[in-house]
Image (cartoon, rainbow, N blue to C red; front, side, top):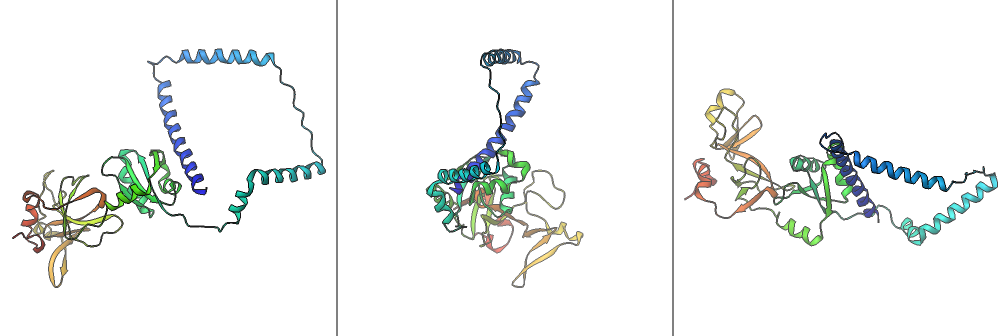
Length: 305
């Protein structure tokens, strides 16, 4: 029952956001010089006049309020308590006697939000400790696991709660199917990125630890720590960074395997980058053209016999 009440609260909040958007739309219509709204005003005036005549034919008697004495006040209080008990019924009494703070099993909910804010809201919910899957099939859809939709709604920035269009609860069977599709990828493995700047890029999964729905990969950079023409796709040249003095080597088993520069990690010119598990799909056998830079990198895991 408590869960249903929380869901009803969220429904009212979402409905309030929709009414707010409707008022904004109506305000735009009222300021539109090409729309004639006087007809509606005349109809409203006619309805008002009819109602006024109807009221004048049926005068309303005056209401007289009697101040209760002490005895009357006590009796009224007792009667009110009795009425409340009868309305609540035995089920409410059992609820009060039930063990408090029973744990609620987390459920999965689908939230529809503005497309332009999908990534921002997803990141914010994750920062608040919620497990989020960004739908790879439809933009603006977030699958969120939580004890209630109220928790999800409250975890959003107040200024972005209006971006929620609607929400629904995901059945357990559908949730199991969705989560199974987000299973841990093998390492090493190849994946193809489905969204964002690296869309259609083939990346290499090289970290076995895949935590909170994220995977760590190596990709051919699209952004460079030195000037390059827009759209350039190539390995980062370490020799162009040595003059800066902030380059640090990454050493594994006594061997230099990469370097760091201004917070970024590079391995043989490849960029270490994290993606959401839901934004990639595994590639069993990548096309040679998709991995030519990996072969050129010269790092042992990418050498193809």
